Length: 273
Ligand SMILES: Cc1ncc(C[n+]2csc(CCOP(=O)(O)OP(=O)(O)O)c2C)c(N)n1
Ligand SMILES: [Mg+2]
View 1 (cartoon, helix red, strand yellow):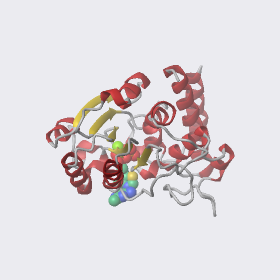
View 2: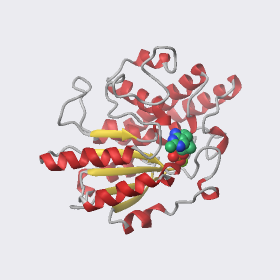
View 3: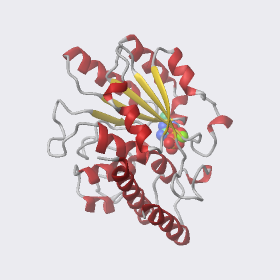
View 4: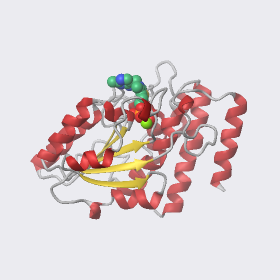
């Protein structure tokens, strides 16, 4: 699939996400807009997954460690055919499988439950280690937020992955410079991330996390360094695609008013032309 088609899918996911947040009256829209291009590239370019066989033992695995942006994952899974597109309208409703954080028992295609930050990468290290022990070739991908990198458990997992030489593991950090209610720089500023990961023995690449060509190239198997886990520091914008949300701390989990909803949708529709 070429990058213009990937951009079309990402735009469709963003519009559906915006609508679902507006209708549900909740969601984490800023972080969903920042992670959408990464999820699109993973599911429609890189990963080997089959919606008709969600538990195929040979599938690639994605752990969305920043589980608060579950809605973006649900919509991507619906686009791919793991769940029905109509199901998205049940987001956050009573008895819906589509909760505020992803649940692997309820939603086909979700690999592990996430939400408490700092757990996805340790789990991903376990997955990658299991594949290595079995001599399997499937890959494990983990997406964390940059605020999430303040969690100490991630750094233990980073050390373990290097020690185990997990070159079947790729960590993508959604580096949008914001966390909940504050800028990263004003809390515990873990940036710059790339030299830290490199010092821990990882192969590191920095990319524009909204440039499909750069994302796809960084995810491709040819760019793996043998014997080293890979970290992609993806420079993104929280609220990407919607002018008044972009790089704005207020939009971590704010819900647009009707007027804001119309403006945001108009901007996304314009970008789709
Ligand atoms: C252990 C833990 N502490 C606090 C929270 C509450 N929380 C949810 S999202 C968030 C900010 C995350 O920021 P970041 O990782 O940068 O995500 P993004 O900017 O992509 O939304 C926080 C503190 C949580 N989910 N888990
Ligand atoms: Mg962030």
